[in-house]
View 1 (tube, rainbow, N blue to C red):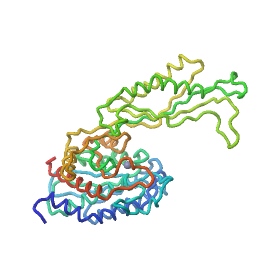
View 2 (tube, helix red, strand yellow):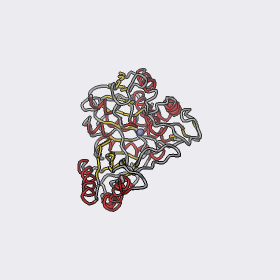
View 3 (cartoon, rainbow, N blue to C red):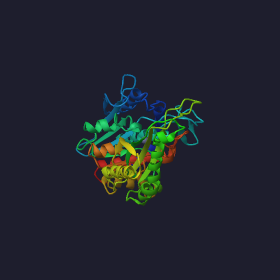
View 4 (spheres, helix red, strand yellow):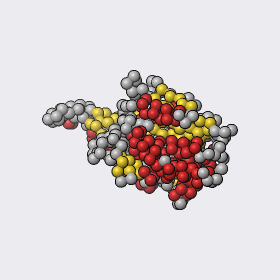
Length: 426
Ligand SMILES: [Zn+2]
């Protein structure tokens, strides 16, 4: 073994390329589809038992009573912890083990974990079992590199990220598993590309707007009041007043892709009128129309003001338009989060990327959210980033894959970053 610990780490990970591939494949073969939350326990136990053999203390945490938790689909999380020699910080790698439905359009079996052309294919390969496998290989290399290290290493496999994280990181953060002094630095191996450090994400507000009308026979619409026409007025106000305002609101957050570097609002759906049966369209003037909006907010925006902006637009319509009545319901909300790009975990990851890939890391923010929100807002731990091998654009797609070379490189980056954090040299 060389006397240079960094060279040793890199060589060990290089030698474990096959182990990394096989570990990724084994993880993909657990069809941990969410919803409903299939196969969480065996997948968590697979991770836990592998790390137990390496001297980790293993905790299985059942998030009882959280959404979707029942006897058939228990929400089982795993946290593995191993102390080094002497006092020092705790570096934690957090991956979600759940995956989204495979959906249509696959040319390969989504859970067969096929290896082809230097890639591993399968649902979750990119988002984010390849990242979980890379973090396990990185940590095992730290144990085997012959160097004593201070502090503590943790790896977690958590559930339900794809449905908001309430049975996973949110549940654990509420119970202190993600708070200092237990944990000091967190790396989440989400797919943000192998040369990027993701320091945060935009916020979300999902809401339902319902316009109300009065039912009548379709041949005499003047006797009723059409809720769909009222909804049209809402869309029209969005087009004329709201969208230009949102487009003008730019952010300091380095969100990728750059189109998301502003406030956005998507209209997810509109449902108006009576439910139809095949061949029997509704013959009535609709008395209700519902729209679901997905508003993404910036670190510079305040959630209450974001809601007020929409409510004021609707109130203005109520003043301007005869018969306009509405209901506004919150569905889901997440505040934006952004770590300091000069904080220890960002700096250590960036310098490891420079060392391993020979180029400067790009600092980015994610257009959508992931579990960092719970670690920041609930766990009160700010020094958290996402860094992993997957290619962002492939997440949730058919024929999802992870590039083996990217996994090897990201495992090196994770090992080097963790080492410098443990030794306090970040
Ligand atoms: Zn993910």
